[in-house]
Length: 282
Length: 336
Ligand SMILES: Nc1ncnc2c1ncn2[C@@H]1O[C@H](COP(=O)(O)OP(=O)(O)O)[C@@H](O)[C@H]1O
Ligand SMILES: [Mg+2]
Image 1 (cartoon, each protein chain N blue to C red):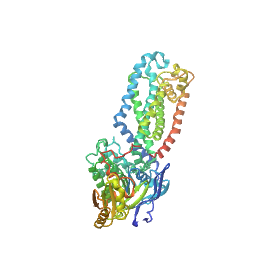
Image 2: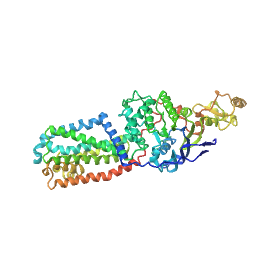
Image 3: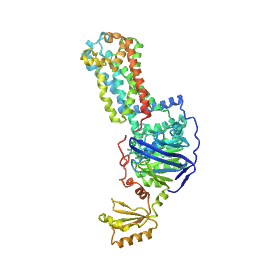
Image 4: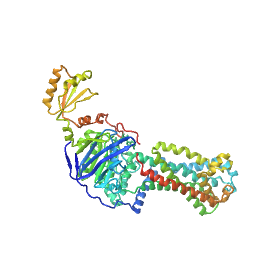
């Protein structure tokens, strides 16, 4: 049999400080950004696709809908559309957090990271941060194009910035939801179809494109209470003023509701994703 | 099994057990690996090699047992253990959209090197693995062998004391395989201890100082390549027969040779381990003559690890499988 002599003594000091954890997260964030910049299919999602949505929706629906919109839209569909479209685009893009993570899981990259003396939190923090930066870029790009084709915020500049911040906050909370989904499902193809289908009813049965009051009652009941509408209304209220909101809603009330959704999603899914990541045995 | 004393064990395991539901993937495994040596875990697909490596590399908590890397308990202080170990998994875990250089530098940063140190060591490593010319190309353009080398090299940047290599040459062409072997030997000359898994007997024979044969989660036998071969006697006599008369042959040859005679149904070979070549061959001839049996052919050869493997496992070794083409390992399961 094999005999063993006493092993060498160990050294203390394996604890990872905050600044190391931050550096690790930055390394992973950089990796995520390089990935987006260098993979053509991701770059298209981040540039051409959102601009195409913006132009198509505006010019196809704008003429027919411009007349029927609340007066705050100033008769321009783009004014109505843009706040909602910010929510639409971050919702469509959120799945990338999940697919990126599942690809890393199945390629063994996560195993490699977990065998390194890096902060455990860095993989998820870096990934969601990179996706947040991607969203910031997409939103900026869309806003530039929107302004070029006539979008003007009707309320204050501060309200406009607040609206952008809400869109980013919502994007960030969706990233954590998607991270949980990806870590749970693990298979890249399966996760793609699991995300793709539910995204549509949430985005279209909402106030993103048209006011919900023309929907059949049952659909309106869903549409008015789901997070995409809540956040879209809040951004619209901030950018256009209270006249953009359904009767009875206030801008402050909608903003608080949207913040509650964002914080609620984060409170549930950030710890869940961390837990699933710790146990991500494949 | 010969008594073997590991004077300076840098990697140890005692009674490691891992269960997945009803399946015991790793079953009471003990290990002691001498500092500066190469230990080869040899076993077929599904034997439990990857699961054992995942435990030793702090990725998976065992259901029972303990293990140490450089004296650090991998379950109790995984964070510290990770500063001493490196892992190159079963699939090359490098980013296709980053260049070779960027991949290695990133891992260096995650090993807590400063940006500058990481850059310097990356240059050294790329030179050592012969990837200087390709260093600034995206890994997406690399061949399977280049990816493997890069994957292996990426872990080296942290100067780990123990490197775990899970099937480092599965799925790459034979020429690149030799390149990886050189790299592993180079590593050990630099003082690193290597634990590698393989399905290839030849690989274990060439590289490993000690070999553990693993099947169904158990280490069935352990020793140097020579010791393992010696357990098979000095010679293997192979008698090719007409399978219709297998019983008669087995009766006639009972008691000839040392140890257990096995039958290879695919090639109709009776394998008889024997101590002394010529004498045993004559004994086989006399026994067959008495029984008036004339075999198709008789051959003798020195035992190879194949013979050990065949004798101790119920699976055929994968060396007999068709040569793997680049990037596609034989019997490789869908990536999970
Ligand atoms: N996460 C898991 N869940 C369930 N069974 C697993 C898991 N990982 C491995 N196994 C099973 O454990 C056994 C050993 O697997 P593995 O360690 O991958 O073997 P090897 O690397 O030698 O091919 C196999 O039967 C495999 O199917
Ligand atoms: Mg394996």
